[in-house]
Length: 356
Ligand code: SAH
Ligand code: SF4
Image (cartoon, rainbow, N blue to C red; front, side, top):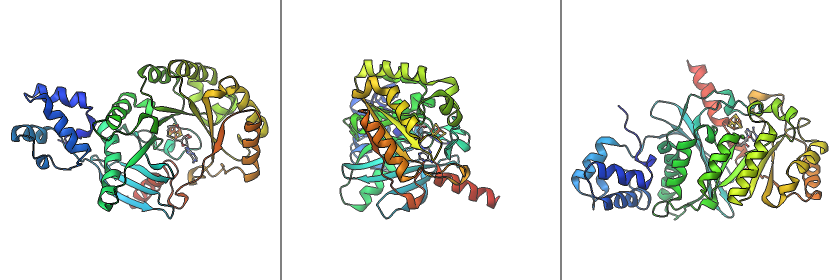
């Protein structure tokens, strides 16, 4: 039987588990320090932890359950990792270099059931949720890769924007956030972490109540129900009014700025009229809003969708600006290595199909 990754436990959960197994509370802090500060990958290396404790941990947990399958490095320093899970499934994780630090994009599910019409991940329906351990391990593997380079580089930012819908795997995502934020471990600041959702309004309420101080991004992509339903079928379950109500609640509870992601697809959602409508939609909360305009990254599977022209992108941006909306155009990274959500994995899965 495969043992779960110990990275999946929050410090409280590890403490409780060790107490239940007859070990002292302080062992949890020691083990935690070895895992996240000294970053060993064998329990036997934890040389201030007694043998009985090491044995019981070894019997019940693994440290590493992921293996690296493919690594692609882009000219701009972006690295894309394709990891194999214990059950053979493949997931992808991306490391990006920014002026402000190193950011990692993690995957939360194998595939995705939301099925947005423009997304490579949505084509491969969900096979399963990742455990919290498998999500933390993506960060740890990237950090361990950086450690081997000996340049003292640290993962400083996290975006939960890889394959999958994090709010459709809510508890594991929350446990993951608790682990990476913990100041005794990786201590990645909550303000440096962003979770992106396709707009599961019911979960936005729950997320607001947790007061995690983590940033929220909402994939809006269209300013009215007719268009949004066409490209994101989740809009039928959570239409724009319901989504906006949940965002109002989130703003009230947290007073934290929300990012709206808006991919610009040529002649689909990139007209001036849509920019005006978008400004109208978020105008009353513009002080706590930021619109991230993302030029669409074409994927083989959706040949009918193209990237907006540079002129359309600037006009959209200018229209929002004139209406007093904070916004920016996301610069592309790793375009030469299929860095768009789900693209590399989707290609690898197709290769597997061909081999079969
Ligand atoms: N499921 C979550 C998080 C993962 S997707 C969500 O949908 O928000 C992360 C972001 O990438 C989303 O905003 C998504 O709409 C966007 N995206 C998906 N496919 C894309 C593509 N081909 N080009 C540009 N952005 C894309
Ligand atoms: Fe799933 Fe997000 Fe892709 Fe939509 S955009 S299919 S929610 S991963």
